[in-house]
Length: 84
Image 1 (cartoon, rainbow, N blue to C red):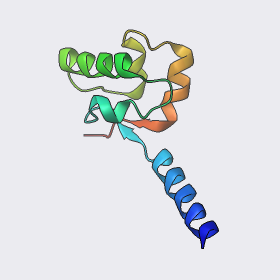
Image 2: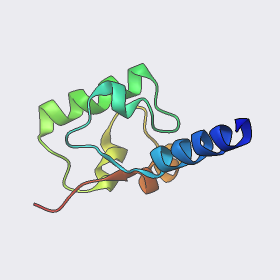
Image 3: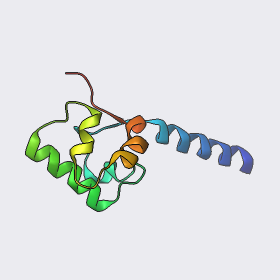
Image 4: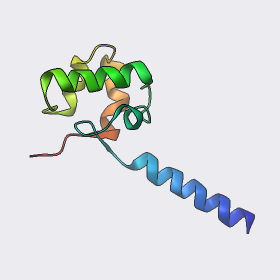
């Protein structure tokens, strides 16, 4: 029973990790779930979006202060910008 519960929790965690975050609708708390994103970078993403409008592509994240090429490479698979 204990192994079944642990396996279920592990699968649930994996499925949550695989869900992509929509950077045009995510709040700071949701953005903080992304790898390498803490409070300051999450707020910077939200502020960038307020100032510039919705992201046109995930690559636009590189324009946010504190997100360089290395961090972007870690983020791109877990983020989406849905087509309008």
